[in-house]
Length: 68
Image 1: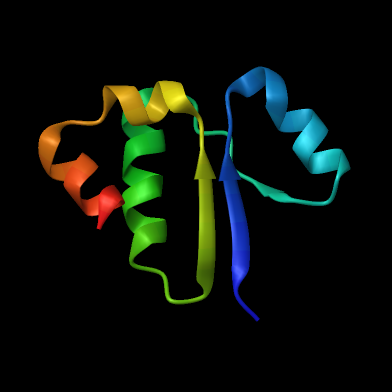
Image 2: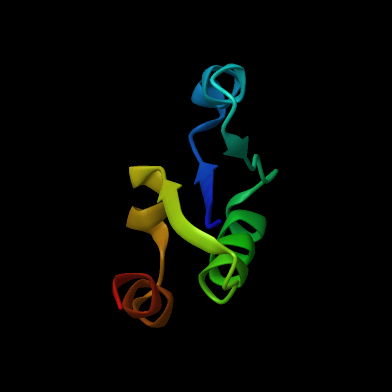
């Protein structure tokens, strides 16, 4: 079964955890970016939900990978 992984804004992480979701809370943007790119290549992950703030900060190459 495919996994749903959420990388939310830090303030929203506890709510998603209480709902039973798999939540990642990287400590900074670079770690969040690296984890997102790692998850994209993980075949066990079916859906990745990320904060708009993280998406807005991605560089062109990373953004294209997310959008593909």
